[in-house]
Amino acid sequence: MKPASAGLKHAPKSSQVWEVDQIQPELQSDSKRPPAHLQREISTIVADATRDNLLTRLCPRDKALLLSHAGDHSSISCTPHRADYIVPNDQWLIGMKRRLLLDLITFSSESVRCQCSQCGKPIDAKGDHLLSCPRVTSGARTSVWHDGLVRSISHVLRSFGVTHRVEPTGIVPLRDLRPDLLVSPDPESEAQGDTLLDVRTCISTNKDQLHHASVNSGHAASQGEAYKNAKWHQPASDQGCVFVPIRVEEGGRLGEACRGFLASICSRLQASGEPSFNRRAFMAFALNHIQLTNFKAVARVIQDNTYHLIPEATRAQTPSVSPALFSGVRAPTTDAHAAPRSPFDSKPHPPPSFLRGH
Ligand SMILES: [Zn+2]
Image 1 (spheres, rainbow, N blue to C red):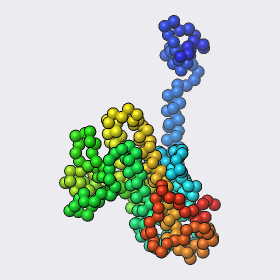
Image 2 (cartoon, protein in one colour):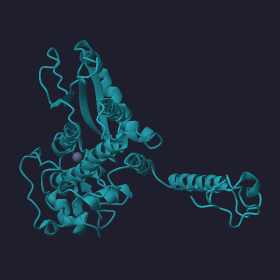
Image 3 (cartoon, rainbow, N blue to C red):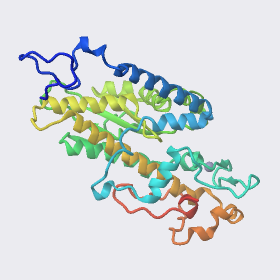
Image 4 (cartoon, helix red, strand yellow):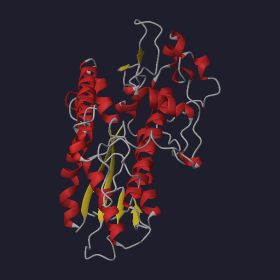
């Protein structure tokens, strides 16, 4: 502890030892500097005003995607050390361009437009349709994105010894319902029922979400939660189980129920009395793993659907999506729903050149 007598009008009494930044109240009036709290207040006001000013210039689609990405505090800030955590450069570029609200595709002119080969709707330059085309929602969006999230949550639970099963059958025998995960109750607690999890991917830029998603953070995730709660709550309750909808938006924002579930697992582990357990470390690990999976999977879906949704004839008319730029890239399969591999257990194919930057 360092005495702060230097620079003070009055030397401290022998029983007083002050920190440099703990100037006595009566001495503060001597300072020429403005109070720190006022500086912070002004900085906050300026930052808020700047943000509001920027938001007024954005279209609803960009606002919705910005809010969706604002819910991901973990994937970008991580420093991956493990090989399976590394984000390939091509996926990183796609993810960063979407985060920065930039175009993924450059059309040669306004008159040249891609039409989706599956549904006929326009393919936008920012890749939204490549992520959300209704004709391929059971393709990469399921096998890479949805299933990748299920595996990532299972990985988090397994890493901390939480007993669970993936896609258990026979839980709700009278209905055609199968949860993505079943988490057994804590053997040390009095709770008896299992927890059933249903994972769903949500897209905030979908037209039916856009109006509210552009002004309410997490709107797409909360809508997804309400939909699944209505479907699952009663059947799960009839079986003595608790249902939790796990919703993850394309930008990484998690639904409130998902965050609540992670917090409950955290409390359960903390109550187990393991001396080395650290609550903040658990949440950081869990969020990082889930959101990094999400970040990679969204890029993979866009990569995969590039082949299935952009017609070859359109590529030929558009220099930036010329077939020549696909050289060395995996040829599209005849089965549009062919299952790509997990974003965490495979080496992805390189993207077409028009997704590599301009
Ligand atoms: Zn389509």
